[in-house]
Amino acid sequence: MEKSLSIWWITWVHFTNPSSHELKEIVETYDVHDIIKQDIKENNTQDKIDVYDDSIFLVLHFPKYDKKTWKYYSNEFNIILWKDFIVSVATHHTNHIDNIRKQYSEDIKNKDPDEEFKVSPYYILYKIIDVMYDKVIWALNKFNQDLNKIEESVFNSKVSNRNILENMLIKKRNIVYLKHLIIPQSEILQELQKATAHFYQWDLDVYFEDIIYKTDKILANINMAMENTESVSTIYNTLANIKTNSVVSMLTIWTVIIWIMTMITGLYGMNVQLPFQEKLETFRFILAIMIAISWIMFLIFKRKKRI
Image (cartoon, rainbow, N blue to C red):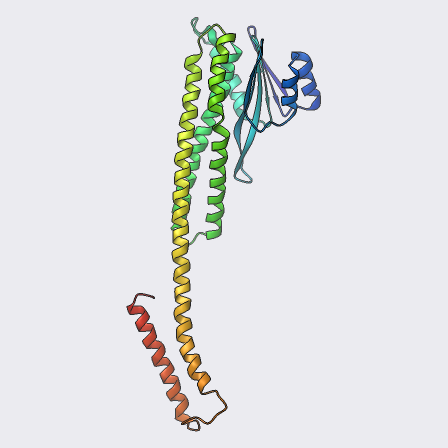
């Protein structure tokens, strides 16, 4: 799917999950380098930046949330910048691209005379990265809110332990995935900031420094979220162990009590001659002894705070 935006002499073309025909159109229309052509066709697992004589090629990965599985996965962006136009190719659709295009059009219409730098593919690239990072920051805030709810659920016996455990494991997976997705981009952005100086006359350092700052902020929030996740996980494991130990302790106590009763009944169940075996009162006496012993054992365990 192709969406084109032309403002003055700047053109921005965006593709979402392009077909083979659209990929061929990109290659033929923009005469891209063979290496770039190969990278666009294949899924890349790592971020990268390649600087050529007349263009810059970027591969960046941003998180995409799946509401069905509650998991994040990668939305790969392949971006090619020339002096007068930019081509972006995304693996999955995101409404943020449409919002960026609308906002950018408004910014250009209302721009000040001193803001000529905004009419450039490099500023468009900055807006793409900036908005996608804002999305990550919002996702981290939502992550922390969900984590607080899980922490409350840990102390709520009405909630299924299996559901809590499943949610915590998904949260752990998501936060680790986000960290590995964002960490490589700090170095990429620093190289991008240097590369733009050779292609563009305006000073965009303040904008790229802003997104580098956002990268650091995101990583700091991720580390904090990882610590909180580990803390909630530790609390859950501790409470689960306490509950398990309590159940095992109770079962042990009842096993001891029943063992005494079993020993007495087993003794009088032997096929040998025993004292008072033929008297009716013997059964009542044995029953009373078993009840008394059980009660005494119960009081002993209760006094020792085992029950």
